[in-house]
Image (cartoon, rainbow, N blue to C red; front, top):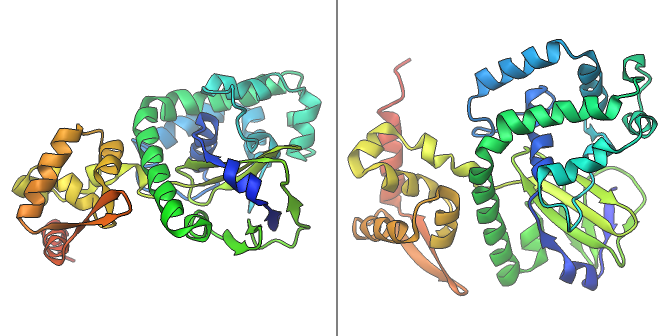
Length: 321
């Protein structure tokens, strides 16, 4: 869908929404080797990839499903639809796949692989998704939700101060607001899709690119890469910096390469509000961060001295070549 036609009512009614199934699909694409990996997307990348490969080795139907579902620049429709309002959990969202007919699933996969011609195809596909959710996503779901919440806060604030063009243009590769009710979804030459009387959802995931989905005639979604990916600063803050100023302050300073509010920092890190405030005051006193007001929020960001400290402590951990 190259361009979506979105009137003022659809924009006014659009909202951000998390989806456990969308995040599971994003992770499945990485485990299957179909999509690029983003740092932090897997808790234990090597072990989880090996476990997934071992699981799939004895599942020819699952392998055929992956081959048909993930193709270059294409994701099968059965994995794309947005959740309904009453679908709050992974199991809620999975009911659509579990109860689908084998014939409908084979048609959506658009493949002629005879391996997929089995009567229990819905349960075989569901078993793959269930494994990814239980083994890789669910144990880390609260941390991912905090990252998604922080991204939503930042984009909502940008929307309120700078309008839809600013909020949407960098949401996912190839997408931008063209004005006059036109949202470019990708560069493909498809007829425009009119979303009049529809509901539009924006769903953050850890995917590197994202996708679009719909439940015609009235529900549409844009799945996009979450910015500030999963508080990677908690893992990537240099050890020398953690020893120098403490692990919590090192985490906050590492995250502040882009301006963030106290609320965002709490959402991303899971630190208590009071602790974040105390650490920020110390970083302010040390002139490693500054703050500025943006609307009703106060945003914190690194100073040149803060940037130099990050670089210096990072360099001490880089082995000589």
